[in-house]
Length: 64
Image (cartoon, rainbow, N blue to C red):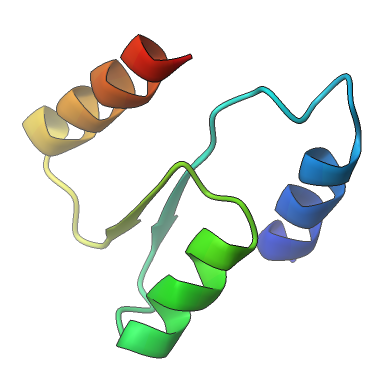
């Protein structure tokens, strides 16, 4: 799953610094918590508008 890939990335020193935005249809608080605990930089729920996605990318890149 995508979260397993994310967990792997966070364990690997060469990949751990890469910001990851999760975009998912799963919108329950537990789902969001799981995604953030897996290492997501941000968690967005679908549907996501272009401007919201653009803002999210700018936000995580400014912190990188």
